[in-house]
Image (cartoon, rainbow, N blue to C red; front, side, top):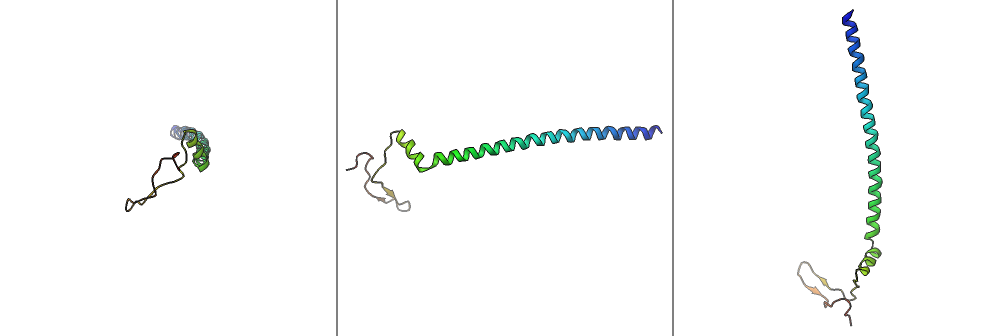
Length: 95
């Protein structure tokens, strides 16, 4: 009789310990899911901001704020031959 009671008691204690461990894991899972959702929102905001800052109008405005001016006579290089196409002139000194 003592053996049966001991086995049942050990089983009950084991169930309580297992239940507590599962609850802790469930809370940790919920916390990590919330953190993942928060990070996903942050990633979307950063992607939007990068797209906004990387569009041509924003880049032109940032360049103008730094005192840069567009060059009306661009020069091109052929990468395979190194040939220069056009006449290089500094921006702001166009004829």
